[in-house]
Length: 178
Image 1 (cartoon, rainbow, N blue to C red):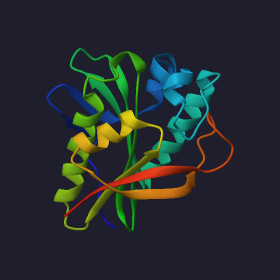
Image 2: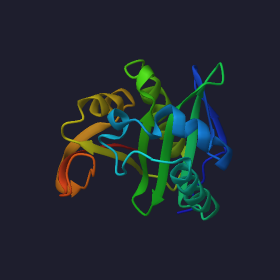
Image 3: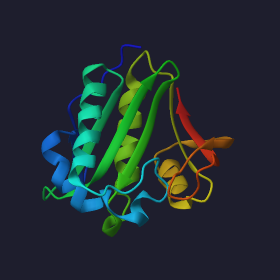
Image 4: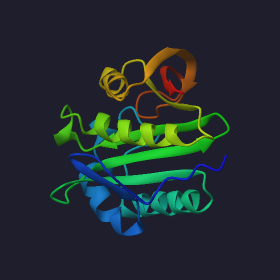
């Protein structure tokens, strides 16, 4: 697939730009250490800013290889709000996201996800955009639905959320296709 995302995108309430190593300290402080934020993610809370730096080096390699696109989300006042992470595959583009806890429920994740999904579906090589979440993560189901995705079903024992269990858990899969 030849799809590539731009290094910066805008929504009515935020700016998303390519994540960089210089964002490490701010990401660490904003959400990477928060157990409530990381509960349904595929990684444990970071214990040192080096963990965040290591992650940002990996997403930089993904970007260079055209495999993934990690964006920091900033409010219009430059405050770090979270991150969107797109992965390109032969199936299309998949998305993951995380927001700092103090802005949950304000529609920022849905707004950002909708923007990325719509951008991806404009590309002629992308037929499918998708995301998944733990079946207990009802807030994330609302994010995907507000972004225009539809629930396709349950992926049984699909993903390990290490902050909940060491065994794979059931996940809802959502998609938006063209």
